[in-house]
Amino acid sequence: MSESRTAAIERELRAGAPAAPEAEAAEAAARLARRADDEGLVEVAYTTFDAPIGTMLVATTERGLLRVGLPTETWDGVLTRISAAVSPLVLELPRRTDAARRELEQYFEGKRREFDLPLDWRLAQGEFTRRLLRDLDRVPYGEVITYSEAARRAGSPRAHRAAGNALGSNPIPVVVPCHRVIRAGNVLGNYGGGPELKRYLLEHEGWYD
Amino acid sequence: MAKPLPPFQSFLDEHRTPVLSFLRSMVGPDDADDCFQETFIAAMRSYHRLDGQHPRAWVMTIARNKAIDHHRARARRPEPRERLPEQPTHDRTAADRNPGLWTAVGELPPKQRAAVALRFVADLSYADLARALECSEEAARRSVHEGLKRLRADERAIAREAA
Image (tube, rainbow over the protein chains, first blue to last red):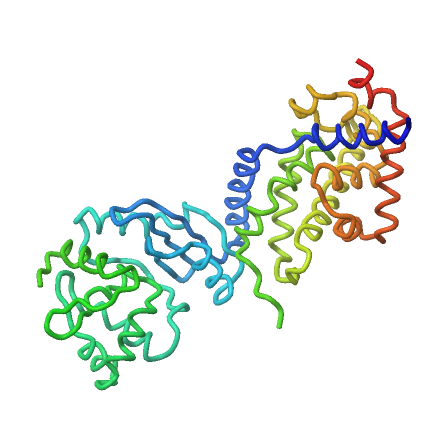
């Protein structure tokens, strides 16, 4: 008798538990992110947003834009890598990413040809990669260079294969325009976000092979 | 080598609902959000110390401490004092189902209340429950058992059955 009463109480406790509905927990979590930001605890802020090419992600730190995620990537993978390489104190916080998101939106609307954002290069691994990627701000909107030329500019003229790898690892695509590096003979070559996206971006910038 | 910590957002997403549910059963819906904020701010400050082994128990330990702080702060206030354990949540669905039961839960001694809420609201295993209560597994089982025994003796807890 008393055992069945205990069982009944356990059942009632589970069934009638004052569970917080998921939506309220999500709101509480969003408030938490803003408060953590006010207290200076957020090392990496990110948001996802819809662009003409699909859903993108931008992540920023106090130093600047750290990461642009392309639609072909998985956000879990992107954020896990950021957590390991920069800081685990990563929170979704749209207000900290407004500037980067706005400039990307303007770019896709054809209203912006150059980005005016401080960049955080911590996810670009290695001297050669950083040098090569930094140098791309000298390749203007709508123009292209070859992998060999990119390698030459980075100081290693014969390293065109390494240049391909370095470009493929670009943590800040679109803003750092690795899509403007193509193979000799106007062959587009590979792209982290897929070759169709590379063609889309170059055509968007008015370049025709 | 220690496993790298997941991004804090993943940690927050994974634990936010059970933590809020637990806090509602400990301090009621009006104050649960404050305790929720305090819990995750504290978790963020010491996140580097979480070795990734028992994150649920770890965050529930913090939440339980925040609930205790909350009760102490309430108890210090000059307003007419009720019994130290505050009235529990009256979450609409739970209240509809069995209001007397949750009132009775709210009047359990703090440790038993935390044990019952962690076990049945947050659905912790006894191993995690022991970690969250910072006691032995045997003591954790005993707290749940004692809590249930009191509830069983409480007429309100079985009002629905009687009805």
